[in-house]
Image (tube, rainbow, N blue to C red; front, side):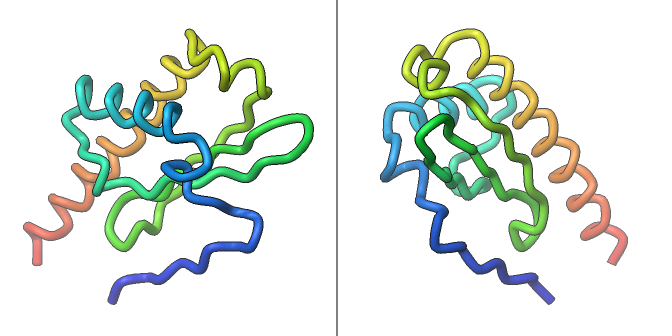
Amino acid sequence: MESERIQTEQEQFLRVALPDLYSFLMEEVEKHYNIHPYDIQAHVIKDSEQYQLIFYYGDGFAHQKSKSFSHEAVERMGEEMTDFSKELGEACKEVMIADYFKMMKM
């Protein structure tokens, strides 16, 4: 049975709120880990001091990875974002491999 997640009122789709950042992160994850954008749900919570990026992935989007960044870091899309894309890619890869082997055991 797939778990269903309810989006909070504060969360916005990253693709809508920050399309350049969404494109950058998804391109990095796809290029280095062959994980496609449809395998990940990307959200953001904005406040006056920072952005909290929240990514859901895995079977039923049951797994989550989130991290907060300053507005400046998001605008620069530099090394911090590249490092986060690697963390996200590794986390997604591990979960997808585990999900695959769990599915093959059935």
